[in-house]
Image 1 (cartoon, rainbow, N blue to C red):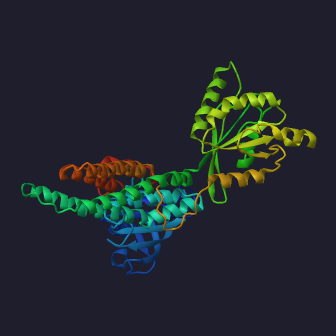
Image 2 (cartoon, rainbow, N blue to C red; image 1 turned 180 degrees about the vertical axis):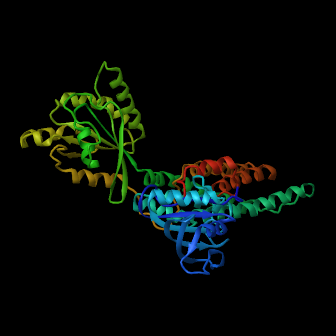
Image 3 (cartoon, rainbow, N blue to C red; image 1 turned 120 degrees about the vertical axis):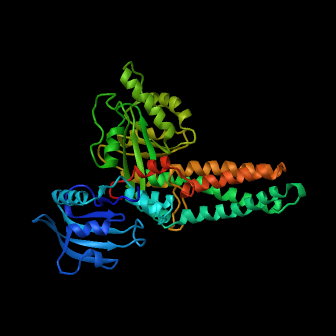
Length: 463
């Protein structure tokens, strides 16, 4: 595959001020030299030094396509590790297409999604976890996701995993050396030191596995489910939080019949809000399905906003509480009493005792009049309870990494059990190597074409 010379537009799709077309491969400079005419004679790309910019034009026969700037990078000192040229042209879609077609006519082919980054990985410019971090960096939408992607791309995660594998390799080598001298009953690997090492590694892997809950929340947003009876104001609240008309608002009960999701950023924290169907008894099959999905989303939520209509009779609210409370165990729940603007101060004071037996924070708002919404924002930030993440902190954000670490953790636990039960070296060696295998899967030291294809196919074209 690496014998092909590939090209693609590396800037965002569509028209813009400028566009960058990237060409990489063994014939990148030769092919670009055939379509690029330098402004100064004798300054062809073939004779240019690496890391230089050349101003010139690209023509199709006698027709001027555009005046461009060509940046030259020579292998192995480029992003992909191959000869690379980056052509900066005007951002017209027509110009981009004409230049790409010229390059293809001269022997390039269009790059597959993520193929430039895949070549960087295959050519040893980065490991697999660093390559995946590039996709996360491109997709980052907050300070937290940007910081985590930068840390992983700079190799913080890889360094930690490499340290673990090196220590394991030292011991497994000694254990397997013992097997070669099994008839002489010698012991090269001190079992006490191995137990200390295995215990230290188990703690490190366990910490990385546990960090996924934080990393996943930072990367994908903290799930916040909005629940309550029909017409309690859930959709109005969602629209207010998102600053757009995302959900239909109506006085008709049961308007929301499916789950509606979107995200916002508060103080650098991403929250994924989930508006659900109102809970009530109904004979409508579609609405019943929506209510069933409400309970499913409730199980997935980290934070629950229970919206309560203050104009609803208290007995009706207490009845709903009997249904909901068993489902709210271990959930970070806020009681959001809505339509406070419709009650007199005396009636509002009387409602203060409503659901007083529930040990949850409460806030009194008017979603329609946008009253006390800032208090709700502050609660959400406190409820997120995310730690400060430094540039050097190693936090797992990738599900593939989490699954591999979980398997590595199970393997190192078997090593500890085997040491306690005084198992023979061949069993210990097998479990240590299994732990090393799963750690190697993360960085790409152990990989297969199917895994690589799946990872890089999710990248954008041109990266």
